[in-house]
Image (cartoon, rainbow, N blue to C red):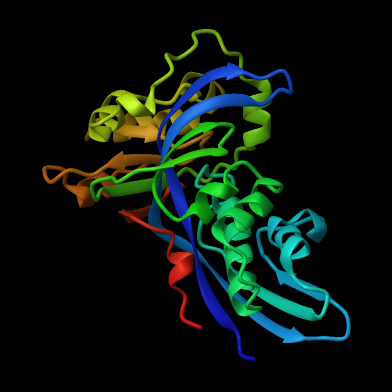
Length: 282
Protein backbone atom coordinates (compact mmCIF):
# COMPACT_ATOMS: atom_id res chain seq x y z
CA UNK A 1 0.00 0.00 0.00
CA UNK A 2 1.02 3.63 -0.41
CA UNK A 3 1.91 5.88 2.49
CA UNK A 4 -1.08 7.30 4.37
CA UNK A 5 -0.71 10.69 6.09
CA UNK A 6 -1.99 11.36 9.60
CA UNK A 7 -1.81 14.78 11.27
CA UNK A 8 -0.51 14.74 14.84
CA UNK A 9 -1.59 17.95 16.65
CA UNK A 10 0.04 19.91 19.45
CA UNK A 11 -1.81 20.89 22.60
CA UNK A 12 -1.71 23.80 25.02
CA UNK A 13 -2.11 23.77 28.79
CA UNK A 14 -4.40 26.76 29.27
CA UNK A 15 -3.51 26.74 32.96
CA UNK A 16 -1.63 24.37 35.25
CA UNK A 17 -2.21 23.82 38.96
CA UNK A 18 0.04 21.43 40.88
CA UNK A 19 -2.08 19.97 43.68
CA UNK A 20 0.36 17.69 45.51
CA UNK A 21 3.20 15.21 45.12
CA UNK A 22 2.43 11.50 45.18
CA UNK A 23 4.57 8.97 47.10
CA UNK A 24 5.88 7.61 43.78
CA UNK A 25 7.29 11.04 42.88
CA UNK A 26 4.63 11.98 40.33
CA UNK A 27 2.47 15.08 40.84
CA UNK A 28 -1.30 15.41 40.88
CA UNK A 29 -2.28 18.33 38.69
CA UNK A 30 -5.22 20.11 37.16
CA UNK A 31 -5.27 21.71 33.74
CA UNK A 32 -7.34 22.45 30.68
CA UNK A 33 -5.88 20.96 27.50
CA UNK A 34 -6.87 22.15 24.06
CA UNK A 35 -5.82 20.85 20.67
CA UNK A 36 -4.32 23.43 18.30
CA UNK A 37 -3.82 23.39 14.54
CA UNK A 38 -0.05 23.10 14.81
CA UNK A 39 0.85 19.55 13.86
CA UNK A 40 3.46 17.04 12.82
CA UNK A 41 2.82 14.81 9.82
CA UNK A 42 3.21 11.04 10.17
CA UNK A 43 3.24 8.87 7.04
CA UNK A 44 2.41 5.17 7.49
CA UNK A 45 3.07 2.34 5.08
CA UNK A 46 1.77 -0.99 6.41
CA UNK A 47 2.09 -4.35 4.70
CA UNK A 48 1.54 -7.96 5.62
CA UNK A 49 4.81 -9.69 6.38
CA UNK A 50 6.19 -13.06 7.45
CA UNK A 51 7.58 -11.39 10.58
CA UNK A 52 6.92 -8.05 12.20
CA UNK A 53 9.27 -5.21 11.32
CA UNK A 54 9.09 -1.64 12.59
CA UNK A 55 10.93 1.17 10.81
CA UNK A 56 10.65 4.74 12.08
CA UNK A 57 12.40 7.74 10.54
CA UNK A 58 11.94 10.38 13.23
CA UNK A 59 14.37 13.34 12.99
CA UNK A 60 13.67 14.33 16.61
CA UNK A 61 15.20 11.10 17.92
CA UNK A 62 18.97 11.49 18.02
CA UNK A 63 19.87 8.55 20.25
CA UNK A 64 18.22 5.16 20.74
CA UNK A 65 15.31 4.46 18.39
CA UNK A 66 13.90 2.03 20.94
CA UNK A 67 13.27 4.99 23.28
CA UNK A 68 11.09 6.70 20.64
CA UNK A 69 7.44 6.85 21.70
CA UNK A 70 6.36 6.16 18.12
CA UNK A 71 8.40 2.95 18.11
CA UNK A 72 7.07 1.96 21.53
CA UNK A 73 3.48 2.58 20.39
CA UNK A 74 4.08 0.30 17.39
CA UNK A 75 5.37 -2.42 19.68
CA UNK A 76 2.18 -2.19 21.73
CA UNK A 77 -0.33 -2.43 18.89
CA UNK A 78 1.16 -3.71 15.61
CA UNK A 79 0.14 -7.37 14.94
CA UNK A 80 2.99 -9.82 14.35
CA UNK A 81 1.89 -10.45 10.76
CA UNK A 82 2.46 -6.81 9.72
CA UNK A 83 5.43 -4.57 8.99
CA UNK A 84 5.25 -0.78 9.20
CA UNK A 85 7.41 2.03 7.86
CA UNK A 86 6.79 5.47 9.42
CA UNK A 87 8.19 8.73 8.10
CA UNK A 88 7.91 11.76 10.40
CA UNK A 89 7.75 15.38 9.26
CA UNK A 90 8.49 17.15 12.54
CA UNK A 91 6.99 20.65 12.93
CA UNK A 92 6.08 20.80 16.64
CA UNK A 93 9.18 22.00 18.56
CA UNK A 94 10.73 19.30 20.69
CA UNK A 95 10.92 20.09 24.41
CA UNK A 96 8.54 23.01 23.98
CA UNK A 97 5.76 21.74 26.27
CA UNK A 98 3.40 21.28 23.34
CA UNK A 99 2.90 17.53 23.68
CA UNK A 100 4.46 16.56 20.37
CA UNK A 101 5.91 13.24 21.52
CA UNK A 102 2.70 12.19 23.26
CA UNK A 103 0.65 13.24 20.25
CA UNK A 104 2.90 11.22 17.91
CA UNK A 105 2.46 8.12 20.06
CA UNK A 106 -1.32 8.55 20.19
CA UNK A 107 -1.47 9.17 16.44
CA UNK A 108 0.51 5.96 15.88
CA UNK A 109 -1.98 3.95 17.93
CA UNK A 110 -4.91 5.56 16.10
CA UNK A 111 -3.35 5.03 12.66
CA UNK A 112 -2.36 1.39 13.11
CA UNK A 113 -5.73 0.59 14.64
CA UNK A 114 -7.40 1.99 11.51
CA UNK A 115 -4.97 0.74 8.88
CA UNK A 116 -4.85 -2.81 10.25
CA UNK A 117 -8.62 -2.85 10.95
CA UNK A 118 -8.05 -3.90 14.56
CA UNK A 119 -11.36 -2.39 15.74
CA UNK A 120 -10.02 -1.45 19.15
CA UNK A 121 -12.32 1.03 20.85
CA UNK A 122 -11.25 4.31 22.43
CA UNK A 123 -11.05 2.80 25.91
CA UNK A 124 -8.69 0.05 24.72
CA UNK A 125 -6.49 2.56 22.90
CA UNK A 126 -6.46 4.78 25.98
CA UNK A 127 -5.22 1.90 28.13
CA UNK A 128 -2.42 1.26 25.64
CA UNK A 129 -1.52 4.94 25.58
CA UNK A 130 -1.53 5.29 29.36
CA UNK A 131 1.14 2.60 29.59
CA UNK A 132 3.42 4.82 27.48
CA UNK A 133 2.89 8.30 28.94
CA UNK A 134 0.54 10.44 31.03
CA UNK A 135 -0.53 12.88 28.26
CA UNK A 136 -1.23 10.25 25.61
CA UNK A 137 -4.79 9.39 26.79
CA UNK A 138 -5.81 13.01 26.18
CA UNK A 139 -4.90 12.77 22.51
CA UNK A 140 -6.74 9.47 22.14
CA UNK A 141 -9.90 10.74 23.83
CA UNK A 142 -10.39 13.21 20.99
CA UNK A 143 -11.89 16.22 22.76
CA UNK A 144 -10.66 19.24 24.70
CA UNK A 145 -10.61 18.35 28.36
CA UNK A 146 -10.29 19.25 32.01
CA UNK A 147 -7.40 17.01 33.08
CA UNK A 148 -6.57 15.79 36.59
CA UNK A 149 -4.37 13.28 38.41
CA UNK A 150 -1.10 12.75 36.54
CA UNK A 151 -3.04 13.29 33.31
CA UNK A 152 -5.11 10.12 33.32
CA UNK A 153 -8.37 11.65 34.62
CA UNK A 154 -10.00 13.28 31.61
CA UNK A 155 -13.30 15.15 31.56
CA UNK A 156 -14.30 16.26 28.02
CA UNK A 157 -15.42 19.90 27.87
CA UNK A 158 -16.60 22.39 25.28
CA UNK A 159 -14.45 25.47 24.82
CA UNK A 160 -15.12 28.59 22.82
CA UNK A 161 -12.87 28.95 19.74
CA UNK A 162 -9.60 30.65 20.62
CA UNK A 163 -6.61 31.98 18.71
CA UNK A 164 -3.03 32.02 19.91
CA UNK A 165 0.44 33.22 19.11
CA UNK A 166 2.63 30.31 20.17
CA UNK A 167 6.27 31.24 20.72
CA UNK A 168 9.14 28.78 21.11
CA UNK A 169 12.38 30.37 22.40
CA UNK A 170 14.61 27.64 20.89
CA UNK A 171 15.17 26.02 24.28
CA UNK A 172 14.55 22.33 24.95
CA UNK A 173 13.17 21.61 28.43
CA UNK A 174 12.86 18.14 29.97
CA UNK A 175 9.48 17.64 31.64
CA UNK A 176 10.96 14.92 33.85
CA UNK A 177 13.75 17.21 35.05
CA UNK A 178 11.35 20.08 35.81
CA UNK A 179 9.05 17.94 37.94
CA UNK A 180 11.97 16.22 39.66
CA UNK A 181 13.49 19.54 40.72
CA UNK A 182 10.28 21.47 41.40
CA UNK A 183 9.58 22.09 45.10
CA UNK A 184 5.89 22.42 45.96
CA UNK A 185 5.64 25.24 48.49
CA UNK A 186 2.27 26.94 48.10
CA UNK A 187 -0.23 24.27 47.12
CA UNK A 188 -2.91 25.40 44.66
CA UNK A 189 -6.53 25.17 45.67
CA UNK A 190 -8.14 22.19 44.01
CA UNK A 191 -10.87 23.08 41.52
CA UNK A 192 -14.03 20.98 41.37
CA UNK A 193 -15.11 20.21 37.83
CA UNK A 194 -18.74 19.81 38.96
CA UNK A 195 -18.75 23.42 40.15
CA UNK A 196 -17.26 24.86 36.98
CA UNK A 197 -19.47 26.49 34.39
CA UNK A 198 -17.39 29.27 32.86
CA UNK A 199 -14.09 27.98 31.55
CA UNK A 200 -13.21 31.45 30.25
CA UNK A 201 -12.92 32.66 33.84
CA UNK A 202 -10.55 29.82 34.71
CA UNK A 203 -8.38 30.44 31.66
CA UNK A 204 -8.26 34.17 32.38
CA UNK A 205 -7.49 33.88 36.11
CA UNK A 206 -5.48 30.68 36.59
CA UNK A 207 -1.77 30.63 35.79
CA UNK A 208 0.96 28.01 35.78
CA UNK A 209 2.33 26.84 39.14
CA UNK A 210 5.63 25.90 37.50
CA UNK A 211 6.15 29.39 36.10
CA UNK A 212 8.25 30.87 38.92
CA UNK A 213 10.64 27.92 38.91
CA UNK A 214 10.94 27.84 35.11
CA UNK A 215 11.59 31.58 34.85
CA UNK A 216 14.15 31.48 37.64
CA UNK A 217 16.17 28.92 35.67
CA UNK A 218 15.67 30.29 32.13
CA UNK A 219 16.27 33.97 31.44
CA UNK A 220 15.27 33.67 27.74
CA UNK A 221 11.84 32.30 28.66
CA UNK A 222 11.43 35.05 31.24
CA UNK A 223 12.26 37.74 28.67
CA UNK A 224 9.85 36.20 26.14
CA UNK A 225 6.96 35.89 28.59
CA UNK A 226 7.44 39.44 29.92
CA UNK A 227 7.45 40.73 26.35
CA UNK A 228 4.24 38.91 25.41
CA UNK A 229 2.48 40.16 28.55
CA UNK A 230 2.75 43.71 27.29
CA UNK A 231 0.04 42.78 24.80
CA UNK A 232 -2.35 40.57 26.80
CA UNK A 233 -2.80 37.31 28.64
CA UNK A 234 0.35 35.26 28.05
CA UNK A 235 1.39 32.02 29.75
CA UNK A 236 3.89 29.19 29.71
CA UNK A 237 2.38 25.94 28.45
CA UNK A 238 3.07 22.93 30.66
CA UNK A 239 6.70 22.72 31.74
CA UNK A 240 7.74 25.06 28.92
CA UNK A 241 9.67 26.20 27.08
CA UNK A 242 6.93 27.53 24.78
CA UNK A 243 4.83 30.53 25.74
CA UNK A 244 1.54 31.57 24.20
CA UNK A 245 -0.41 34.79 23.91
CA UNK A 246 -4.20 34.52 23.79
CA UNK A 247 -5.16 36.67 20.85
CA UNK A 248 -8.01 39.16 21.18
CA UNK A 249 -9.44 41.42 18.48
CA UNK A 250 -7.58 44.46 19.84
CA UNK A 251 -4.13 42.83 19.57
CA UNK A 252 -2.00 43.75 16.57
CA UNK A 253 -0.39 40.38 15.94
CA UNK A 254 2.07 41.67 13.37
CA UNK A 255 3.31 44.28 15.83
CA UNK A 256 3.88 41.56 18.44
CA UNK A 257 5.78 39.39 15.98
CA UNK A 258 7.94 42.26 14.76
CA UNK A 259 9.75 42.73 18.08
CA UNK A 260 9.89 39.13 19.34
CA UNK A 261 13.17 38.26 21.10
CA UNK A 262 15.89 36.79 18.90
CA UNK A 263 15.77 33.06 18.09
CA UNK A 264 12.04 32.87 18.79
CA UNK A 265 10.07 30.57 16.50
CA UNK A 266 6.41 31.52 16.33
CA UNK A 267 3.17 29.98 15.11
CA UNK A 268 -0.18 31.69 14.67
CA UNK A 269 -2.63 29.01 15.68
CA UNK A 270 -6.23 28.33 16.66
CA UNK A 271 -7.90 25.87 18.98
CA UNK A 272 -9.53 22.72 17.64
CA UNK A 273 -12.52 20.90 19.10
CA UNK A 274 -11.16 17.45 18.23
CA UNK A 275 -7.94 15.59 17.44
CA UNK A 276 -7.41 15.92 13.69
CA UNK A 277 -5.57 12.58 13.65
CA UNK A 278 -9.01 10.97 13.47
CA UNK A 279 -9.81 12.91 10.28
CA UNK A 280 -7.20 11.25 8.09
CA UNK A 281 -8.82 9.80 4.96
CA UNK A 282 -8.00 6.16 4.25
